[in-house]
Structure formats: C-alpha cells, structure tokens
Image (cartoon, rainbow, N blue to C red; front, side, top):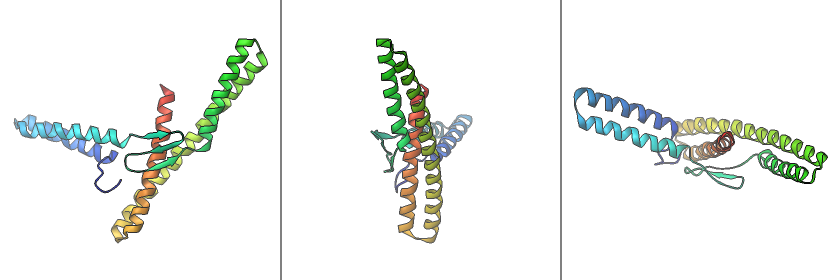
Length: 176
C-alpha cells in the first residue's frame, strides 16, 4: 500500500468494527453525534474495502489502484484461447454434422478450462506469497529504517495484490 493510500482490506475491517461500536455507543448513550460519526466511519470503511478489491485489466495485464502490476500466468491466456477455439469447433461440427470435429471441440474446450484453472491457481498462490513476503519485508525494512528496501518490498506486495485480485476477479466472473 502506497503512502497516503487507505485502501487496505484489513484497515477497512477494523474501521467497520470501530464505526459499528461507536454507532452503538452513540445510540445507547443518546449521543447522535457519536452515532452519526460511527455510521460515517462504517460507510467510509466499506468504500475503502471496495477500493482495496478493485482491479483494472487490459488483456492479460492487471493493475490495482495502489500501483501494483501483474501479468497473468500464460496458462490462463492459453486456456481461454483453447476454450474459444474448442467452442468454435464444436459449433461448426454441430452445424455441418461432423461428429469428430464436434468431439474434438468439446475435448479442447474441456482441456482449456483445466489449463485456465491451473494458471489461476498459480496466480493465486504466487499473489498470496508475494503479498505476504512484501508485507513482512516492508515491515522489517520500516523498523530498520531502510527506505529503499521498504519501497522494494511494498512494490512486491502491491504486485502480488494485483496478481491475486486478477485471478479472483476472473474466478468470480466464471462463477456467475
């Protein structure tokens, strides 16, 4: 997370809980100012959570608002392509009555789904690993005062987040 950026998932959960407690206390004590402030904090935390999970994609490149950039695992792109070609073969085979072409298309589509899933799992694992290593490394570098290492590890965290969010977004899109 870059300096001044408040779109951390963990921070948003803490802010939501803090806002809820403040709102309840304001409600119990009759202090409308505290209640309003707590409700506002909860709303802001929801916006931060949404920003933390947002991702921009252009082809097989993903970018987060924090500046993280990641390229999809090649199996994701190749798997998607194989699904498209397989569906085309299946459609043409259906249209012209060519059972062999139809079966070939079904098989290529199925293999493409597996290939894409393999790439998604790879990106999920790599993204989680880079986020954890980057967060830990940035924390240690911050404690030791090494700004160059802190920036390097923060970039690793942000790139891992882009890779992770990209895979999550594609998996969610396919589940719909």
